[in-house]
Amino acid sequence: MRNGSLPVRNDPALVSECIELSSRIRVLEKQVRLLNAQLSGAAGYLRCSICHTTKHESEFWRDRSYRMTGHRTSCKACERAKGRQWSVRSSV
Image (cartoon, rainbow, N blue to C red; front, side):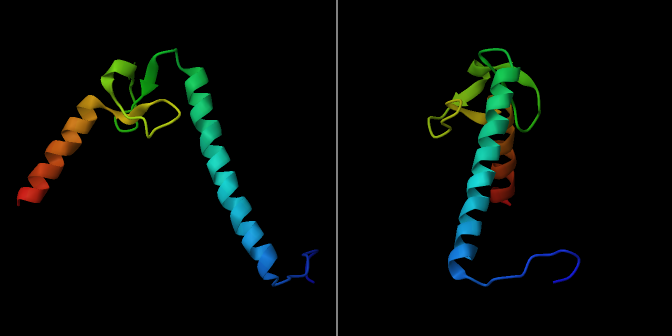
């Protein structure tokens, strides 16, 4: 042991538990960020993940796979622009 560090144990059960807990922490941190964003914004408004502007939820496509809001994270205008960029790149 150096500098007050703990002895290392290569127990596979502990390693897998640590990996599980790390992934669970990441999921919970993401949920906290989403909840804070919802609480800080006015009801019915979302922030676009691409242009970073706050818009009414009608400006976002509905998507039930996004369980927190029920809408996509990018606005319709940014989704259209992203689609145009993709079609230009794929046609070349």
